[in-house]
Amino acid sequence: MTITEATQVQNELREKVRIQPIDYPVNIIAGADISFNKFSTTVYAGIILLSFPDLKPLGYSLIKKEVHFPYVPGYLAFREVPALLDAWEQLPVKPDVLVVDGHGIAHPRRMGIAAHFGVVADTPALGCAKKVLCGKYEEPGLTKGSFTPLIHKEEIIGAALRTRDKVKPVFVSPGNKIDLQGAMSIINQCVGKYRIPEPTRQAHNAVNEFRKGNLEAGFTTLS
Image (cartoon, rainbow, N blue to C red; front, side, top):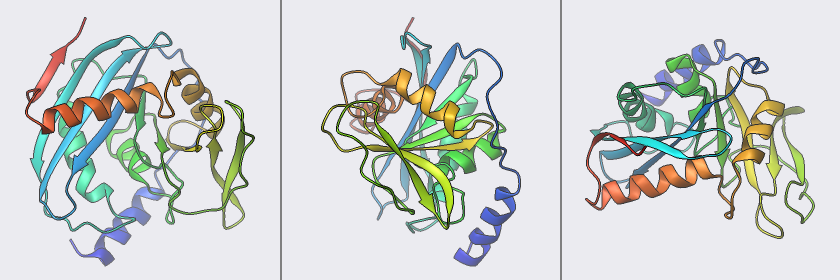
């Protein structure tokens, strides 16, 4: 697939994104993360299930996959989503909401990995990223829970959220079947002792251990 073709796919998927409130109870949440070397074709993907709101780990799904789409900023979903879909298929139960380490609609074409995955998997998904991909924001207050809107082309596409006092903010955006208010509520309830919320932090840890050879591919039950 060329970049031009990938852009067309993103534009088509964008029409299917649904930004809407979650109108049902959230009992299971998931975190998703990817690990890869941008010069390698090997991708390591992981999704961890947690009970909500107590965030007790229930199990994790791990996949190693070969991908051939090049590393191009703004198009990373074409490297990441196929592996995440394989990990998703291994889950014995699907979460009520998926938190992805990356962006939702806070993307130049409103199609970050959380939006891309959410549409393809037809599931509620949101992004929580460590860095801005596009848009501008004012620095939020220094206390935990402070936030400011992330704005691109006069549209609010997400928020900069302070998850701990005096640490760098994270960037929250809806992906699919959730709105910004719902995404912010979820992330605020997922913040523990660290800057990164628990679903993506624990998914990151699991994927790194998998990449090191300390965990095996497949689904593992934790409780």
